[in-house]
Amino acid sequence: MITDFEYRAIAAFRDEFEKLAKSDINDTIKDLGAGAAAGGISSLIVAPIDTIADAMKPGSFYVGRSAKDIIKSIYHLYGWRGFYKGTGVKLLKIAPAQALAFTIYKSLRNESRKKK
Image 1 (cartoon, rainbow, N blue to C red):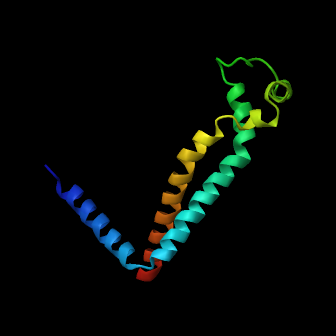
Image 2 (image 1 turned 135 degrees about the vertical axis):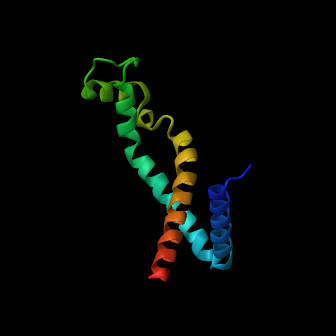
């Protein structure tokens, strides 16, 4: 059974979706692209830091070693690509999530500015 609150939330979502559908779709596509690009680029920038941080976590092969030793070891074993291991999977998760988050943020910001 749907409660009154859930019904209002669904109705509000439906209304916002209808407004979005009536708005310029090109702006929405641009926002989706910008959000995906920002999420992907930021993920690529911090990937080496994440790799080193993951290597320092308990249960890792590198526990107890310094960051300098970990960097040398990863580079020696895998080359510079070793710092980006697993980044493809992170991109598949982060890019769509950031695209949606950015698009929703822009839509809500535009709506709040219209009401003022």
